[in-house]
Length: 118
Image 1 (cartoon, rainbow, N blue to C red):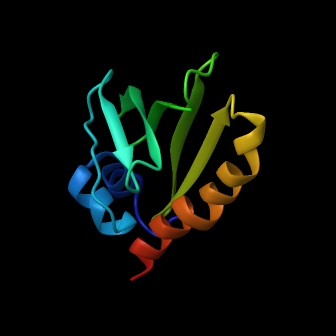
Image 2: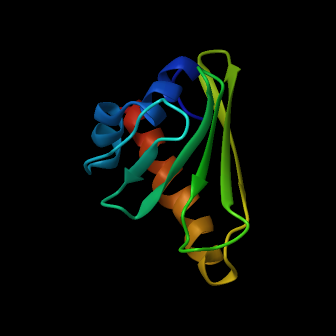
């Protein structure tokens, strides 16, 4: 649960300036399908696939030349004045699974939650 409404969480995930505020690193992001993005000093790179404002973000995350592509789908659900953030991440390479799983909870979601807790 994130202590902000879905529209604000969506903006935090899709606006480069806001991304930089909560990640602490320069971010490249556009709310346009087929554009490249980069977060946390290129630790996370990929391509934006689709957007439903305030509700959903679908991205391809790059892991070299891996096929099939690793797809991240973030769904945002309103819960009174908070947001439930549902993350589905498919096709994670076996050797990256532990780092990615830990990164989602301890870095990505934790940093976003902290941003809206202040």
